[in-house]
Length: 339
Ligand code: NAP
Ligand code: GDD
Image (cartoon, protein in one colour):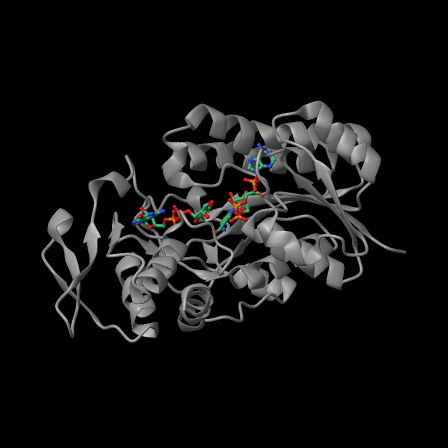
C-alpha cells in the first residue's frame, strides 16, 4: 500500500530534499506551503507536478488549518520541518519565533492526537538546544540543554512537548536533534551559503568583499541530503525515540571561509583581531573579508560538535559527504550561477 506523508516546511532546504526522497521511495507526499505575495517554490520546482506530490496551503500558527490538513490527508508519517529557523533573526522577532517554532508544534501534535493518533510524527529539533554550555563536547542525546536564543528556547519547548505526547498519549513522536546541515539550497542568510555565494560573486566581479560576524564560532557541518535520510530512518524504527544526527567533526567559520575561497583558487591570509580582523587575497593583497559588528548575536553558541553514535548504531545512519566535499559542492553550485 502507498504510504502517505505530510511535510511542513516543504519549500525550505530540508523539506525539498525530504520530499524528493519520499517520492523516490514511492510515498504520496503532501507538502505544506505558506501563502506568499511572490512565488516561493524555487526549491521544489523539479517535483511540482510530479505524480504523487500535492501542495496545500497552511501555517503553523493556525491550529484549525493543521487539523484540517491531518484530516484531509490521513498521513502515515508527518514531518514537522516548518519553523522561523534563523537563530540571529529570532532575536529580532522573538515572540513570532516562539509562536511558530515553539507553540506551532503543540498545535500540530494536538491535531494528530485528536484526528489521527496512529500517525508517526517527526519533530525537527536542533543542536541549538545544547547552546554549547557547559562547553561539553561531543554533544549527545544525554547532554543537558541550555538554549542561547529565542529560537533555541522555542525549539526546547517543541522538543519536550514532543517527548510529552509520546509519554502521555503513546503517540509515535520522535525528535531528530540535528546539527547544522547545508547544501546549495541553503538560505542565503545562513553563514555557509552567504560565504559560497560571496565567493562566486567576488570571482565574477559582482561583489567587492564579504562581511561576517563571529569568525571563531565552531559548527558541526554536514550535507542536508544525508540528514533527510536520517529523518526518514528515525520514523522507520519499531519504537519512537530521539536521535542526534551529526558528523562528529567541527570547524570554525574562519575555516569555512578559507576552504570556500581555496575552491575558487584564492588563498586567504588573515591580519588583525576582533572587529579589525581582515582576510586578504594572499596574491593580490586585496581585502576580501572583513568583520561587521552587526552580524554578532546578543548571545552566541561557541561550539557545536555532535556524537551520532546512537543513530549509527540503532538506525544504521551514516553521513556520506565530508566537510571538504560539502564546501566543494556549494562553491561549485554558486560559481555555476555566475560564471
Ligand atoms: P528553512 O530552509 O528555513 O525552511 C523553513 C521552512 O519552514 C520553509 O519552508 C518556510 O516556508 C517554513 N515556514 C516558516 N514559517 C512557517 C509558518 N509559520 N508556517 C508554515 N511554514 C513555515 O529551514 P531548514 O534548514 O530546511 O530546516 C528545516 C527545519 O529543521 C527547521 O525547523 C529548522 O529549525 C530545523 N533545523 C535545521 C537545521 C539545519 O542546519 N538546516 C538543523 C537543525 C534543525 P517559506 O518558504 O514560506 O519561508
Ligand atoms: N548567519 C550568519 N551570518 N552567521 C554568521 C555570520 C553571518 O554573517 N558571521 C558569523 N556567523 C556565525 C554565527 O554567529 C554562528 O555562530 C555561525 O556563524 C552559524 O550561523 P548560521 O549559519 O546562521 O547557523 P546557526 O548555527 O546559527 O543555526 C543553524 O543551525 C542550527 C543547528 O545547529 C540553523 O539552520 C538553525 O535553524 C539550526 O537549528
